[in-house]
Length: 142
Length: 135
Image 1 (cartoon, chains in turn blue, brown):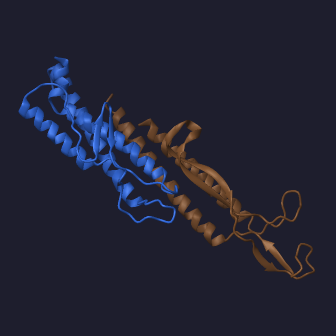
Image 2: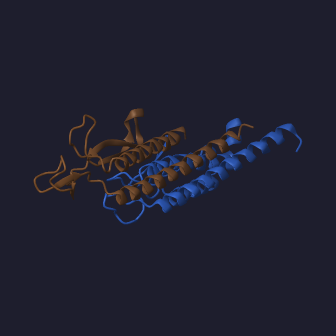
Image 3: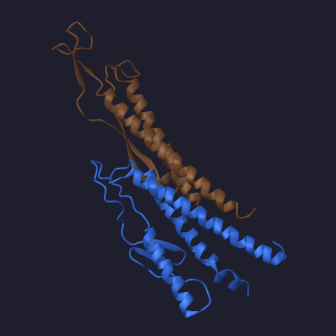
């Protein structure tokens, strides 16, 4: 019963979002750390592909009616392995190639970082309000 | 998530090392003798960055792989044949340091340093948001 409580509503969806944003944050900080490294190509995990995969999984759960955790399928360049998400190709940014063979794009990385951080914080907030809901239900008062 | 803080910290260390090398180049741009007093003009140092952080056994991050010597030619200055270190034509070898290039590199290194500070702040914000789940 406890499992179905945590898997039925938005909690599962938000948890997947948090896991994705956490992993993408690691990739983005690695790109920013290697802004000046020669022969480095920045990589990225596509948020758009993740969104598509997530909405497909939610649709499947809603239509199929089967209980249980969300099942995310590979989509575009993203591959979902146990506990990890992988980007199939190392394509990151279409910026010009500098003389040190690094196609860095600082503004693009900073924008992605800001977006990702906001999405992460929003998902954590929503998880928190889910737990607050559960807590008030247990208490019986608002 | 804590790995992201390590990545940003490795980048801060690497860029600080770059700035140190640049500062050394600027300080020694007129140095013609080495520590023992022999006539040996200072050669410009170049820090080489590489991905990964072997000091902490991590594949993510960045580190200074090597501090190379710049093999380009020394700058020749005419001082006259009376100078004790001048060659037969009265020319003296001066260090191959161009202060304009060093200043531009210093600007780029400090910009990269600031970018990594921002990334570390974002990581801290996300960690604090996750911690707020507990309270």
